[in-house]
Length: 521
Image 1 (cartoon, rainbow, N blue to C red):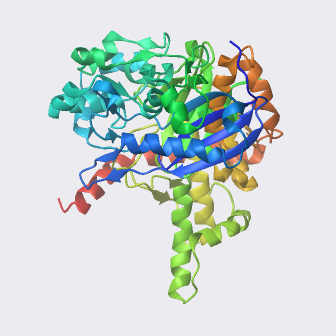
Image 2 (image 1 turned 45 degrees about the horizontal axis):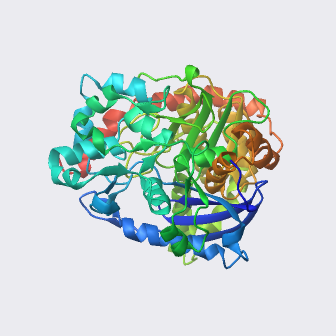
């Protein structure tokens, strides 16, 4: 399929920001427009977002590009959209919202998750989807709605995700993509819905709410006249429905393709996302039933995924301790002002002396184990331990947690491709590479999620014959030279990991007792 124009717009509708990014057909980033996203939270665990506002914010982000790109509408060859995963965006008659969307942050389905996870059919559901149950997923949320507020589902005609809702507004087509369809309601091998999975969730009678599955590398739909008028783009412009933002970011950052070998991609920001791209036949399903298997827009290739609730949030915490002490002596210092000192503290400390469990989030942990009561802690402190040693232990804890996640997916990877703010630190890259004995590369790609979606559109309109060819031009040239692991550091972390694992596995009764104490029980 051919198309006129020399630009592709990738839309990435994240939890906090909606971005519209213009790329030329060779993958060069031309311009970015961003609009803050808005959602509401209650003390009862509800986290919701207005569907109407989300669409208007998307329109504003697209229109913002015209301030940076002259004659934008005439230059756009295609448009692609990705967005925050999971959640439930219910749409009813005449494509009107039924209620505000339940986001992936919404915790109301927790008791339903406990009930479903204990069911006899749950292991078979996990082996089909490759994905552990949790409160963020659409299947869990719809099962909870069905049990406690069925009238919401009764009014709905289709259950969408964030990007699917935007795609509906852009094209008038109710659809979802193979990635979200298969890890929630389907089978990662077939990339289709699975009746056994739907039955295990107790949603067989709601099967009609699931939309058609569309692969945006193969199928596009034209921008409607109404959406063209709203965005300032040309009616009929091809629109591609991207996969979920997690794998779009990984695709844009380099989770697949390049020099070969077993490649992984970790995003180390406030939270940690760890992915391994493999042929679906090589998927390792762990005994605990945790993690995700999410399809890539590459035939036969999927990602195994484990996510940490907190990554650099742990570093923020340990720096805040120093800032608090300095403040008590009348010196005002913000934790971010101490980031520049981290490499110095790492250099002033010996590796592998103290184990740190990086579960600083109040929500506990979900990868590679699920425990809402999990909390952070040090093991091995002594009178000789000083603050630089604690900083190093925290950073090494991030590496141990990463190794824990990758070990749950099978063999450790040969190469780790890093994104996120932490990737800028050479010392931190060395620690993470040593922790999993992998060479490390970083990507110069700034907006990887939008780029991943735009790559799908580039293939769909025939700018590239397939995704492998697109990756060769859009992704591989932006990867840094590989940094091999430090053998001595890797040997140290081989010795440290069993201690970390023992502390993690023995922590559950301690965490439970502390949780009871905090509740006054």
